[in-house]
Length: 507
Image (cartoon, rainbow, N blue to C red):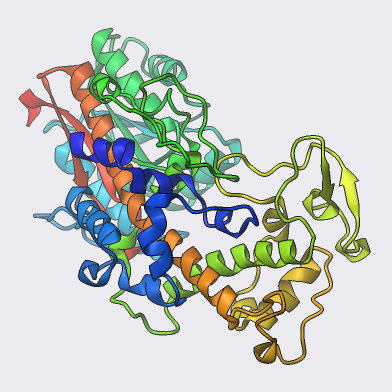
């Protein structure tokens, strides 16, 4: 954990890459940090980013050193070998599930049954964020009828859907009793829901959460530690939680959690690093502070990137093109004087920054609106104009002229494309990615995006180890706390690491 913390808290290159979003570098006033000089001058071809993930020897020394450190420090992601692989779920249980969901439900159900106490007749399981109840039903079918499951979800429609599935699938099959409750989970509401459900039942309770979004995972950890410290009629038996959606965390309340990580010195970002779209939030002095978009990046999975250069049809190439071309669109608008970047609060901004209810057919290039309400989502690189653009079909990225012809009308701007973009003189404002100036800019955007994606698993690794440390601090030596790679990322399960807690005496 110390080395991960040092990389994120004290390495100027890593800090600057996390702090500066690809949309920042197309701003007319952007100046790259000095620590970028090596790779900034190296990045001249839009395909250069493909050499980065696994070929450090051909990179600029500063980038090679960073990639080497990333590969050495991030947690490995290969799935933990399973001595008893789960059989495919019965066809009835597979209904409504994608192959990814089938993989995750099957593996998590099998692992849960493996680590529960040997006597499962009295076990009580709480499925937190149960959704449509896929995991709930998979467990219920494999537990004795005397076992009980409490399925919690904050969405009444999800709980109703789960009940409907149960009526169709489990009505003629012996299974554990299932109770559904609609609860917005916090540490207090979770413990109260269990108390209300069990009453005086002195049963062992195992907590379970598949894809525990954002703040839900820290809240489950807090509730479990509290249940151990202040026992009720029931007693905690352990938990298995797979977290996700780190962008929904609320630092510093949700990260860092452990006293140890909070105690490590964090000097803060070096001077001279300023992001227009990704500002650092205010945090107490000395506490590790990551820019908001770092938590989005923690969801990246470069470990499953294909051998590069990839086939031209590989989805990774299209995803990179989307990042690059949408940033170039902001550059294109700036070059036409349309103000893609938000003005200071209260200043004049273009109608492009209004909300999505503005008709796109009635806007001219010169329209402005005095308002301070049209601001991007703070801290994640969002620009109002790109938010308004929305999702474009993949076919829009077939060529740069096609992209402009599709994107610009979406935001009420005439494309005014040259009839032969490839012949546009270099002396004109670049309007095609084949011009030298735009080609270099595209290369730099792509390299920046790739390096940020590679740092994402480092951020996630530190979040996971911080949670393990917080549990060990809060529970003491009577509990075994570990992380394990439950799912296979190649099956589409990007968030494949589970936190597992069991009583040492039951192992």
